[in-house]
Image (cartoon, rainbow, N blue to C red; front, side):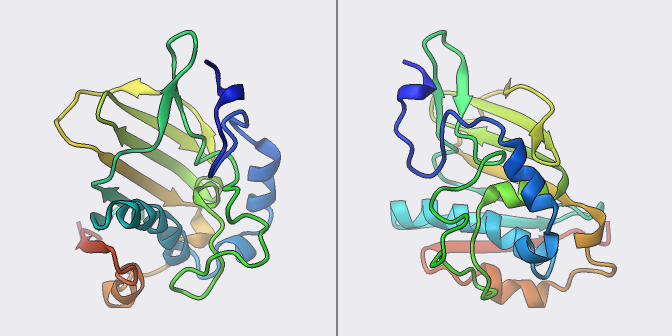
Length: 206
């Protein structure tokens, strides 16, 4: 069975990399990432919150790194990954194509900062690089993106007995804060989802 026969729920399995969509997002960062990095962070945490709500509860860790990147690691089931009729792993294209539930939808869900949710592809398009680590119950992979485009294949990684998704991303320069990101401002935003428990690790000072 190939991706053309897989049911689309949040993303179009056949889309792969939607270059036009990524270019649209990059052309207007003020609209798609109002407030810069904090909004992009909320776009990522929202997926962890979706997973937590579907299971009744969940946890994630937000880490602020010294290089200006941010990572969000959750304890969910991992990003949906399937095998095509040739046995190749195919990950749902959450980073490189639009989220059908939110992008361009007039009454899309609002994130805790009061701005519309548009999906993970906004984070991919507006990040110098993004690394997606994905642990499923049957296998695990990592993949790197630059400006929303995959620059590696799905690279298998060792099973450590856990499941979940980790997204680490470094926003493009204009969206990174010029000074230290205050965790006291982030905390009420990232902890706004009722089913998700969030810890913030601040490593900005190295």
